[in-house]
Length: 198
Image (tube, helix red, strand yellow):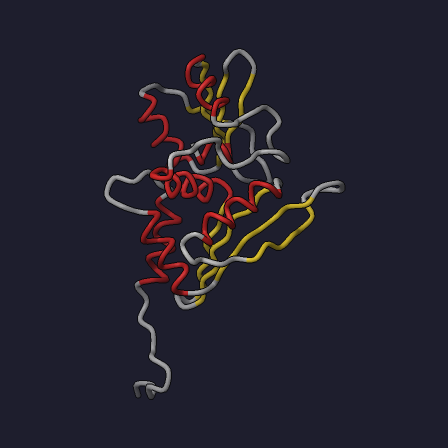
């Protein structure tokens, strides 16, 4: 559901669509749905995009019950009455769609999630605060009239806590982002004050 909140939308006639450049992620979703649904879209900024589209009255009604609506980019919010046991899974889906983990030289890392909805990014910030993960909100221009809101952290303990809660056996995730976490978290770190090896 988090992936739909970030990279998906509701369409007419009970339609649900997910669009992404990450074909591997869409193949996992397609496998869950049990049907050949992936279609190739035209390239955007030299990147090939794909989508999954299907019509299902019950699925569309369930997503609406949780608060999904058409033209959601600027107004999407935290799901209504989302069970707390699914919150980390939901945020992982949002991260796989609208998040980034940047790793440089295995020792510098930045985790971030962005949204054009201030209310939604506030709710994500509040969610992380419950687990003593504190991130500030910054802004960039989305377009002439709207802002893009971003939360981010480079703190090792926060990134490790996020990783430990995001991933478990058989969790559904975008593998390339999970692997970036692991590159950073598994890198050797020199303790402060220890002399460098000759």
